[in-house]
Length: 45
Image (cartoon, rainbow, N blue to C red; front, side):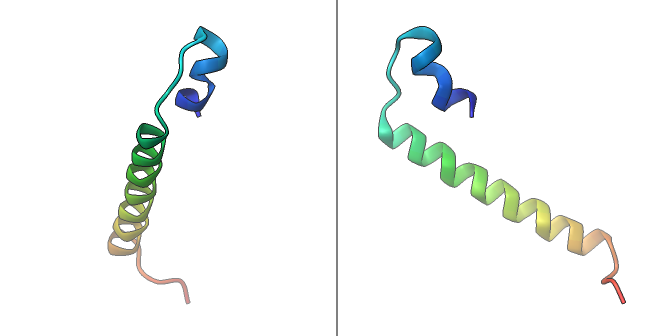
């Protein structure tokens, strides 16, 4: 979110490729966190 708001705050541009890469990395981190939750917590009954 901060990266997307950077151009408005500083008057600089962020390459679309960088935004896409950061978005994919955040998606991957979210998936890994969900997997870690499932590993640590037993399934709800």
